[in-house]
Length: 159
Image (cartoon, rainbow, N blue to C red; front, top):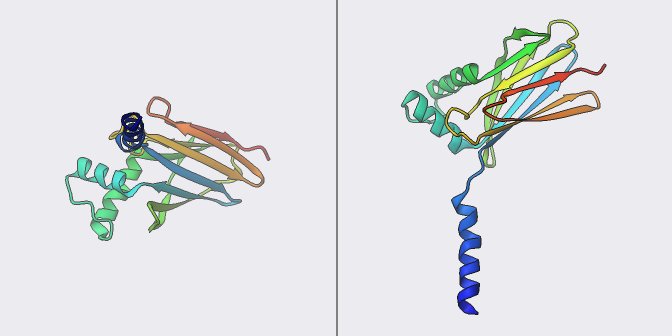
């Protein structure tokens, strides 16, 4: 009986340590004249992708490393409004609890009918990476799970 309990305990504990989840969460707040975007990722994943991609020590407390993060995002995160690319700017970066939080803003050209987000963040490093995108517009909320084979979320505005 003791052997059975120890075996179950061992497999129960190691099951959680042997498997890691790879996920980021992006929130897109649609305002009358702009998009406010919050991206949350795990620090070790971002640091690893910067090391693997740019072969530098990933110290995000230093400006050059943050600049590499911005460049990485520009190549792996894009916004289209009504089929046209929209530039975004970085409005902040911080660490909260166990997440890196990246803040972005983009101006909206007029009243959009559709907003598309392409998010391949970390999918070049982790095949099983999932990027969750939530759109918030007034009282409406829509959510998408993006995977490497389907990295695009398309939100059609209701109002």
